Image 1 (cartoon, helix red, strand yellow):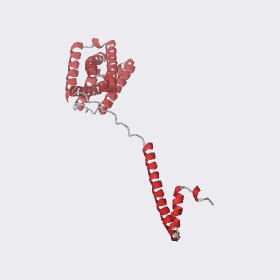
Image 2 (cartoon, helix red, strand yellow):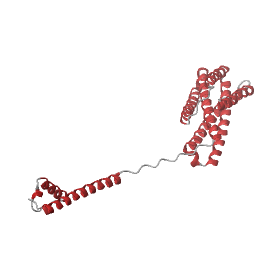
Image 3 (cartoon, one colour):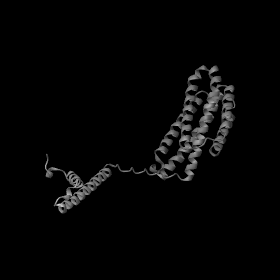
Image 4 (cartoon, one colour):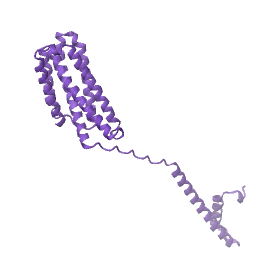
Length: 262
């Protein structure tokens, strides 16, 4: 058996309380026993308080700090926001038209000129990639497509089919005219975007805007590559070249103006 001196404080207090409950205070030393019982009760209360304090401090020390919410990037000024909406909308419409033009031209051209099959396939795939890119950008920046979408679908298909019916040179003249306007349009967008970055700073416009600049630059370069292919394949030898390209370029400028706004 262990002596009372070797017991822990809670066990001593519990033993004293149990002895008291069994009538231990009926002895001649009841006054002293009452004092011992009171002391034991205080010891129990102190031990319980200390245990709660220790548990509370342990919980607080193990609770991870709440993460600081990230700072919200300031919104673009409204004029730049309006420009961005219009630019993405018209770029999407232009790439849609380009894919439909090539889709309508390819069967007729490759039937009479099989050597053009690889070139037409490559230009179509590049335009289809551009279209997918700008579809994703519309969704990312929450910009609606142009309301003229169905009209441009019909107009581009008719333009591609009719120029292919006129012959290889006319089809290439169509590509020359379209890509001339599109290349110039992309250059204009790049100037505005680069000016916006210089004015607001890269930190405010964010990495997404820098990536958009690179995307438009890459798309413009591929469009101008198509222009070079068209000239190399006798675009300027098309019958009525000046009138044909003038009409097509005028239609492109009108479509750009409308798509930016509607």
